[in-house]
Length: 150
Ligand SMILES: [Cu+2]
Picture: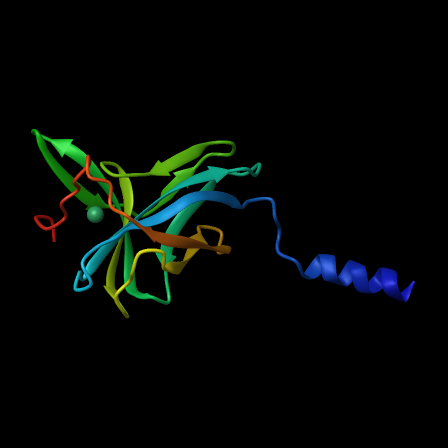
């Protein structure tokens, strides 16, 4: 009986798993060691039964992280900050070059290929989830130049 009560308390103490995201392929394209801004890409899949809104990302490795969306306007690639990334129940959203992405400002130290960085997501309901992004070789076919926008 005592064991049962302990187990019950443990369950009550756990956060609800109903709205969690499955994060895949979280990666940071490698950048020069002096780069003040890095990008991150990943796929977010909502495996729960509730819609999820990610309203913020943060990381112990960066001073601040913004969620951005790139789009073509009059033939010019522009990007703007978005307030949230909304993923309906069962849906999957890709953060990828030319679309949604994270911009991570002022790294506390240079990152090398293969390094992993902790990223924390905050949902609109206040819940948080953390994930890890790995530094990978930059893909050459999509050169996403951020220098004109900031
Ligand atoms: Cu951006």
